[in-house]
Image (cartoon, helix red, strand yellow):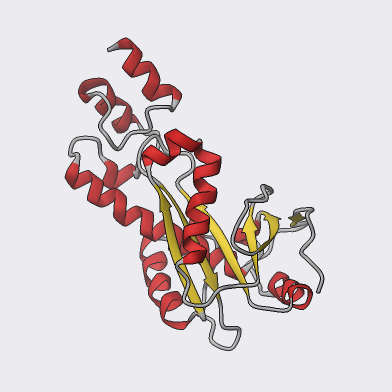
Length: 219
């Protein structure tokens, strides 16, 4: 049995929609099921990082799966339901703000990805992971630069990661009102900057991030 290449796959040309071509190649080399893995929330100033993992059924694919960033909020939510209903297996994992502070964002992302795979009802033999960093996961790993635009499984995982994190940020907005988490989801935005200046950071903020740390130092 061949193991996945350690070199990241790089897309050479933009495609209208991702396909299962990379999954088919990896299935042949690993001899088992292949999942796609992607994250959401590595860059925000607040909230956890999330990850999704999906094994799609090639005979029962929801129409319109694409990189979550290319879809509207309503389309992501509709596809989330279809993916969960029709996939062979799926999972979502999080790494908390405290874990981001303890491990750094890169390793916390890997932790969220591990949890997403471990949450799946069926475990994969290998994973296609968006990006060029080879995380240590519970299965073999093949990295794919721009994977959410090339691999249907990664695109599906990006949808689950994004929708799950968005819901959590809406809940944090209710818990910590005034920061606008429901709107900007913890990312840098003028309303977020103003709230930080007037209210200071809350427990949902990543205090190791430079803008948050600067506010704490000035307080």
